[in-house]
Length: 411
Image (cartoon, rainbow, N blue to C red; front, side, top):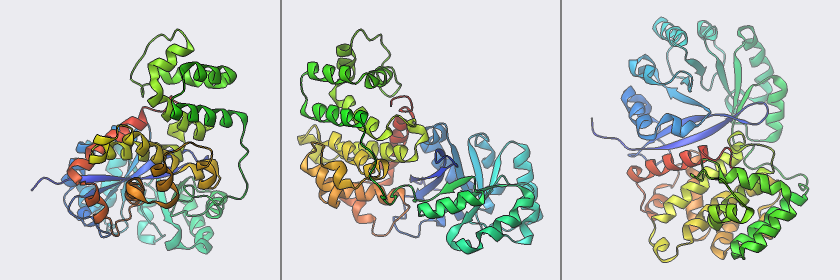
């Protein structure tokens, strides 16, 4: 069998507190950069495990669960048991035939510590032996219909599985599903919420905007010290950052000036952006938007670093990072992107990418968004414009995931 190359799609799964619970992992074959990209699931189990070996499961997931689709061949493969049971949920695709052999296999996997989920599921009597086994039933809102949800859920209650709502696209749908008793939620409702009211801009946020602008302008360290001293709540976060794994340095800090010098303006700019959005409510690893923004930013930075333009402009990768972080700022701050961008002293190429998706950074942002959403319509030209292939994208994605997993204590 020839060597196959893969890249990774990760779709966030949230819990009832809208914190990140896990990811559905989608491995895409190098041979197919189009919308019809699921044929590889019909291949042998070794395809998925080659992909997992290439990425590294713990590197992809951090502390979260991974939902992995399996067809009948993969389900029956002994290779499935190479996966760590505590890290994965085995998700049976809807076309898996329900036979005595399949039911016995699921019982065996449960006894070995695995969790089982049913994908895109609608109640059928033939599944009743499996309902006694499965941990999670995923209900596709479009396939089931919002009006049919109460009746469908009432049918499942006698087996008491946890219910996951798929394709939740609006906050209204989320609220309905929550009231019906769903435990988990998957979809893009949180990525572009409707802005109903302006989020109050508090003193802490204004201080971070000021700090960010100072860092972009590369003011003297003394000015940065004064900004921190005027906002003591920022100092604790700064000291945490110095000793976080994302910086890769553990040292005794003797002064504010020392902390700033150890980190450098480059890292501080990144931290200021993350602190702006985190608003001291959730750690990065609990906030699905921050995870998405940080992963997107790091991926864009790594891709741009390999482009010819970056050889002439050493700050270009940093601007790619800023573009990725800020691209979800409207959702994080619940305000229009134009109002987010206005007070920030951004380069024109970053501003253009965020507001119109134009320029090289805008094109890259569009590509990364398509990968995240599993949207492969017209994606091949975008890959070509950055000289990307599956062989060089996979390790870059792994590095981006690793970097984000190390950020949990940084904000």
